[in-house]
Length: 106
Image 1 (cartoon, rainbow, N blue to C red):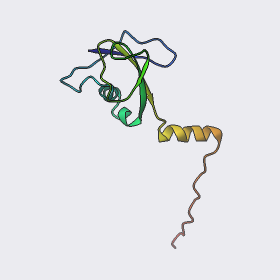
Image 2 (tube, rainbow, N blue to C red):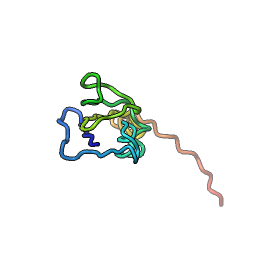
Image 3 (cartoon, one colour):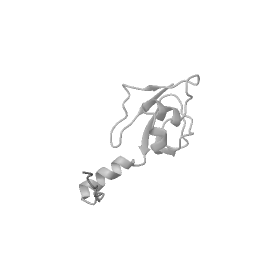
Image 4 (cartoon, rainbow, N blue to C red):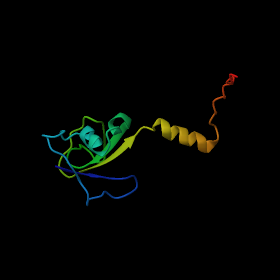
């Protein structure tokens, strides 16, 4: 089964599908996330799916949604801790930890 990925505000990439089989990891959104990156299911928020597996187009789905051949998927993830820290640095709101006074032994 072939599933195509789509980035936000762009057309789907029909040239490079993700191939899923029932024998390997199954045909769910979770199996696609695992093939892209092993930490993606942990950071997963939702996905939008276009294709035959949906009741309406696009449909917001979770990790357990079963996909059909030639579906298009767009994955959204929660912000990670490092992304939040980078945003705080840009805003100048990062609090630096106070340096501990270490006594030098003579």
